[in-house]
Amino acid sequence: MVRTATRFITTLALAALAWPAAAQDYPTKAITLVVPFAAGGPTDAVARMIAQSMSTTLKQPVLVDNSGGAGGTIGATKAARANPDGYTLFLHHIGHATAPTLYRTLPYDAIKDFEPIGLVADVPMTIVSKPGWAPKDMKELIAYVKSNKDKVTYGNAGIGSASHLCGMLLMSAIQTDVTTVPYKGTAPAMNDLLGGQIDFMCDQTTNTTGQIKGGKIKAYAVTTAKRVPSLPNVPTAQEGGLPGFDLAVWHGLYAPKGTPKPVIDKVVAALQVAVKDPQIKARLEDLGSEPVSVAEATPDALRKKLASQIDLWAPIIKKAGVYAD
Ligand code: ASP
Image 1 (cartoon, rainbow, N blue to C red):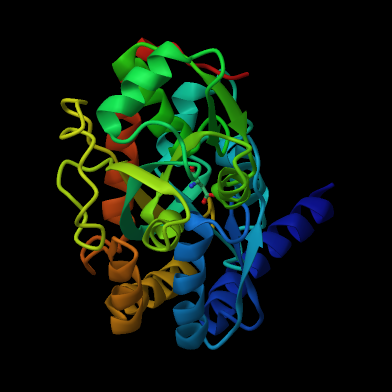
Image 2: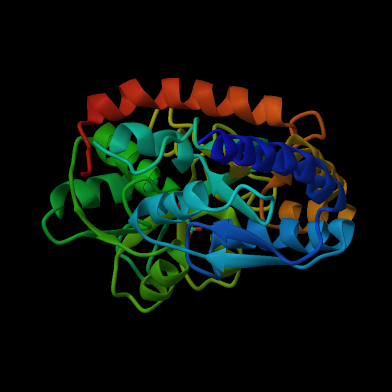
């Protein structure tokens, strides 16, 4: 008995000694970056830009794992349960702060099961429709949706996604409910929008800018209070008749809870290189977005943002009365 206890304590002591060494050498193999939405979509776009830069800095491949579904909660569950050794990281957006209120039960705790690494980028959204949809502008869209609510369809990436949140705000502002069609991400939703299988959606500029500029879909509004410089002709939702409408999608990088501090420090440093990268800045700017400042690409900034956003959205979601099991 005593011998077993001694052996156990020795094992623990050795593990404690082993951590700093492993953490010191980190990374010695490829890192997986879990993205909780489909490949080719807006969250994936931000993740891949960051992953490429971080691969260069950390001198190991950072491979994106698209685990989409259930508004981002499937990917979040996977990341929360991953080994906290630095070889699994997780990039999510505003949905990490809305899911705790939207879902009656979640298999993870959005705060306690993750180590924050830093904020990444803010991305505006756009209200867009299939080509040739009848409404000409935002005012007409509101009237059309109200009078055709039984046949209109709205695509989103599931409850907890940014596209769901935007739709929820829009529907509650105009006090109308329409049929929603959930996808594993807005990349497949965009395909159906282009093909006319769904009528409209609200999605990040990182996914819609090219299609809007190419005249492939109709743009009615940007969701931010100010117009987006890369889409100067698209009015804001406020200009279109939705007072107070203001939504931008913030992104955060996390690791599973328990990831050693020396590892987190290295990932933070790599993230800070990425947000300063002029190529990433230029690419995001073209897509109506911008990376955060270095001061925001820190665990503290993300920790505060997440906590304050959970508090901000909880009463709004509760008022809208939207829940999932
Ligand atoms: N745009 C999606 C969302 O609504 C996510 C994605 O496909 O990246 O959250």
